[in-house]
Image 1 (cartoon, rainbow, N blue to C red):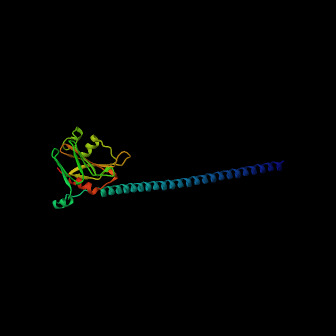
Image 2 (cartoon, one colour):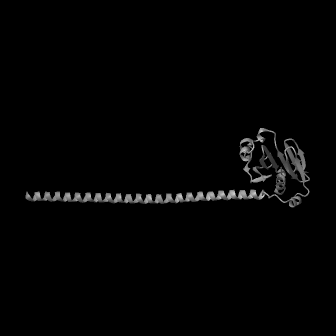
Image 3 (tube, rainbow, N blue to C red):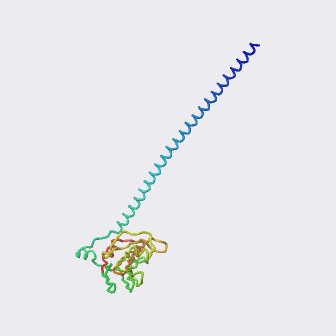
Length: 240
């Protein structure tokens, strides 16, 4: 009887020990799996952080590159326009005579201005417009230049008006770009450019204010031809 009781105690002790060992193994395995999971999550988070940082730097570099390209395009466009249309300093009388040899002079006493033009150009003067038209070649005329000074409220701004603000807000011409800065008769000029279209030639239009009168000079590039040597001489010869 005593031996049977001892055997039962031994079996119970063995079961307890086995249970403790199994529980410890399970707990240890759970801890290991948790630690491994935490390590994997940490590694993934670190990888994501590195990737986000690289993407951020790449986006910044792309923005800088895009800005540099835009600045380069603007500089090229400005250089091209300025090359075509270079303001000239007022020449001396002797240089002026040589430069305009063979040219004629138109005077508008009513509006108080004069301008020189090539001798083969015809002048058609009206009260509000003066048209300078070149000889007919291949069924087209070149050059084609108009000086306008319309008798309307829009062309009679208050004295001291800024020409660019007035033209943009009152005249509201259709144009594709603002041209190079220019002065005509020493006055600030608002210069706009119209591109070629299927219906009309390209054009450069210059606005300037003298007193309370708005003047407009339109240069139409008929025959798709541009000669800024002649255009500059015409514009620089305009005086009050």
